[in-house]
Amino acid sequence: MRLAERLALYARLMRLHRPIGILLLLWPTLWGVWIAGSGHPAWRIVAIFTLGTLLMRSAGCVINDYADRDFDKHVKRTRDRPLTSGKVSEAEALWLAAALAFAAFLLILPLNALTLLLSIPAISLAASYPFTKRFFAIPQAYLGIAFGFGIPMAFAAQTGNMPPVVWILLLANVFWAIAYDTEYAMVDRNDDIHLGIHSSALFFGKHDVAAVMGCYAITLILLAAAGQMAGLGWVYNSGLLMAAGIALYHYTLIKGRQREACFKAFLHNNWFGAAVFAGIALDYWLNVPL
Image (cartoon, rainbow, N blue to C red):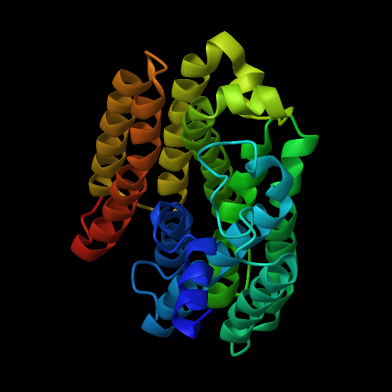
């Protein structure tokens, strides 16, 4: 196989053709970067955390496919993935994941000791999340911690400490992840039942739509509290109102529990995260008083 073909398989294994996962990881990271930097983060920090997001999400996708290699072959949507189909070996996948995680670690080497220390649980969370589907009833909650760990790292890098707003933002991301990944799990509900994999869609059962909307509501309440703690004003709250409108739109998509509509709602969460970030960035930029 030619090098170009091999690299194309690696790119597919890293899901570079599906950037939604990168964006869902990037937005909460940028929330933390901007608030920790009081609206004026160093561009070096922005670059490090943006590239680190890309590398860690790519590593997570490779580990996910390695963990699910025996499940994916039984699902039509995933049976042709590079690892499951045998086009990429298990050893190659592990080496690729390790290289991506190492590259992400090299990025933060110039940062302070606290940031380096936090990279250990960050990598551990990313590596262990795919296996939680075997025993944890709501693995989406674990995903929310893994996808939100850029928040404490961003504060560590810029302020060297962990104010209470860090944990409110992280908790908000946990509930947001449960919301959007339950929408995704609603797409794969029948396959998960067949394979014996846990998911929030199965855990919530017939109350799945209500649970999704409840998680969106809790997310917005926590984000509002975080904004107040950070001294953000009405521009930020306007961003939250936009995000609330997006969540209501998702209800119109998922209420019928149709696979394509639920998947559309999942993908549309990019705009929820973007609305929150826009509120943060514009509030600091305009410096509108409360």
